[in-house]
Length: 56
Image (cartoon, rainbow, N blue to C red; front, side, top):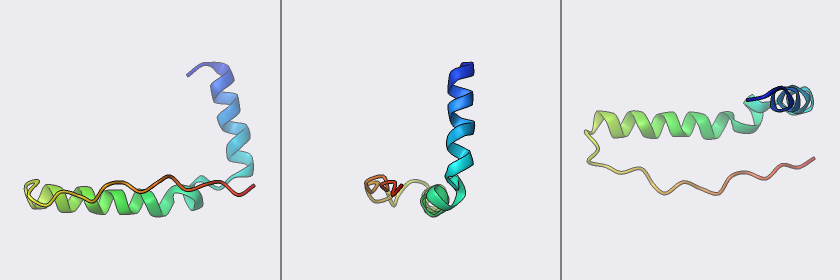
């Protein structure tokens, strides 16, 4: 990532709480991954949901 991308990321993170925005989806994804690994891949995870929209 170049300097512009890094600066843009810093600017966005100053206004948005990324943990709050993505935390639930990340935790759900980790739980699905854990379940898939423990089952040996027998139980496929459901199709991913649409990404949440940002309310600015």
